[in-house]
Image (cartoon, helix red, strand yellow):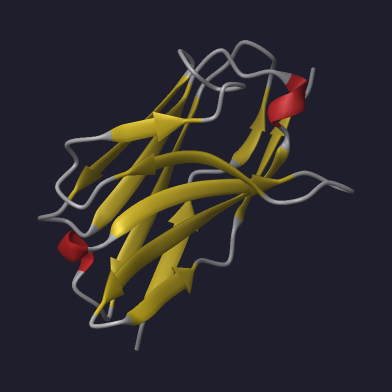
Length: 120
């Protein structure tokens, strides 16, 4: 059974930090690209950060560059999102995603999301 379980969300003041975690099980974590998305109320889901299967390459949305860092620990089947200098506009539900193409098939798994609220 495939599971992605996010944790670490919460309420934080502007300028603060949070670290999100996503624990994976039920699939070969180390062979998947891992991504963090977010969705704010009334807005479309957007890609925040992506990391390749071995962790050698990352990309970030322009809105979070220099503030957020994605990382992964393949031994622990976990991907992280370190969020610093948080702004009110970072308020959203954050989702973990596992993705790969193999043998002509797409494998695409999602977590249930964790709420991040940035407010004073």
